[in-house]
Image 1 (tube, rainbow, N blue to C red):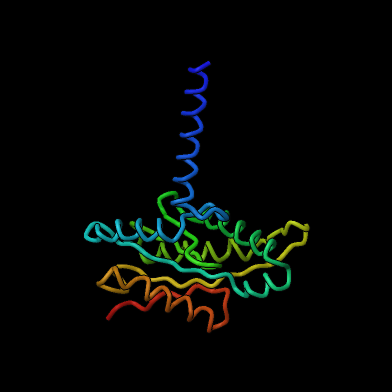
Image 2 (spheres, rainbow, N blue to C red):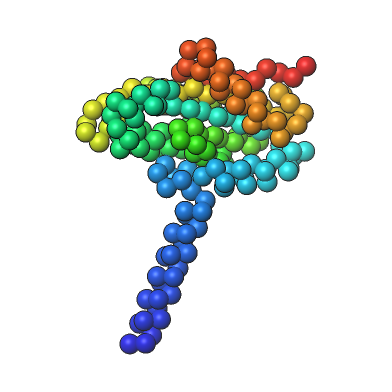
Length: 188
């Protein structure tokens, strides 16, 4: 009887540890990395910049507040979940993706040329916009995203400036009509 208790206790402890580790690294709603884990991963990869060329993509769901206001937060959560799934389907297994804010996501593309990064960003955009998201009530909702991206070393000599550049490009995408990808200009 005691051995069964010990096995059960160890199994429960192992499951609790796995659950804790998941919660510490992943966004519970979308299944992608959380902001903290993404920043840790980005920092670690950025430290190896002599070995890498890489891109950073920020994306934001267009008119997400309207979705929450019109359909409710439960359906807004459904949109976030589906975006997490579609994002993971659109990138390589080696590309860390994260939910870094309410409706804001990010992807790091290590060992990725500027041209390939542009193709991946456009693939993400199309994967989201080309098929409606089915809400829990069965209604289909067309959703679009805006994306801003920057590439090292093509856009900057300082990998630490990629988040600023990607964020600027995200706002440019939103200001110029949404549902688009804006890439930072090539450095002079």
